[in-house]
Amino acid sequence: MGLKEEYSEARDWVDKHLHFDINRDVNLFEVTIRVLGGLLSIYHFSKDDMFLPESDCCLALIQNPESRIPISICLRKRLMPPKWSPDSSTSEVTTIQLEFRDLSRATGDPKYETKFRDWYIILRRRMVWSLFSSNANTGQFRSYATITLGARGDSYYEYLLKQWIQTGKTIYYLKEDYVESIDGIEKHLVKRTVPNGFVFIGELLAGGKDFKPKMDHLTCFLSGTLVLGVHYGLPKEHMRLAEDLLTTCYQTYAQQPTFLAPEITYFNIQGENSNDMYVKTNDAHNLLRPEFIESLWYMYQFTGNATYQDWGWRIFQGFENYTKVVNGYTSIGNVRNPTNVRPKDVMESFFLSETLKYLYLLFSDNPELVDVDDYVVNSEGHPLPIYAE
Image (cartoon, rainbow, N blue to C red):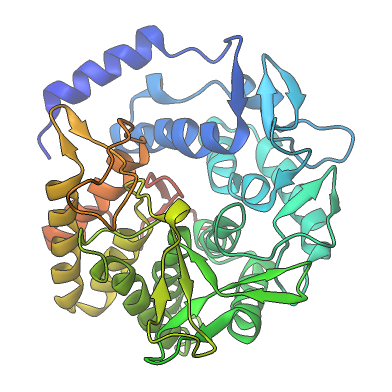
């Protein structure tokens, strides 16, 4: 992109001011995908050793001797559960493997890769229909927990596939678990709306007993994951679900006057009204999330269908019209009211590392900028190399 001056300024800040030994809460999942993943990605692209984290700086984050399952929060090397729950969520535990495996490969220290392999062997014994409930507590899974591809569950499924790709397609059980999970999703979570038959992915409550016709925007990641899997030789039938789900995700944008999607959408499956989908007041906010744009990029990469670029451009215009402020962009509180979107004065880092990055890649028409045959992209938009084994 030619941002050499900005890169130099950022490098100088990392070199002089980025420290890990600080007296404050650190979320294992967030610091791994955002900070560790970002540093590793820059290291691989720049070949600059300054960006390579010292392996011991991350050691405290992954040790939980009671259950061997990592705890969500580390406060100055002391582990504790988050304030809102005694549990570690599925996504927090299973969406850090790409980064720590790459840390082992980059530093030559195998302990991280070994530990994460052991964790997953524990976790995979707890699946229901090849799906995970979304909370774990010291290794014991809650029988009443929600099974979801939304918050606290989404990226587990993404990282099954991406770990298999990262390791040169050499770890068979990752591929097997991913394919079986997609089968479970299609059998138990996929429904169609009334009256127009839009495909969406709902949630199972109480450990799988009750279906809830609700889908988080986060779930829109799945279309991109599915088409990436098809590219790597997994069942071609997955393409149909990828396309159908992407159309539904697009409608969550297109049906709002701001052309921006809400955080959560509910769906009509019993014909109780004439609308296929609706939004509750508390769910009408938009956090500038990247999942749909990410899936558009993958879909355009592998199909060349310019419709996906058109969709991305309309959404970009929505961001420009309703979220742009003097010094950046802001999350908004209400996508349903274009005259009062209620700016929140918050811009998450993923808007830069993912949303804008995927928009740039979508419009660039240059597949070699991030070659998906050489790199696997982590959950925060940071490309990491694919290894032969």
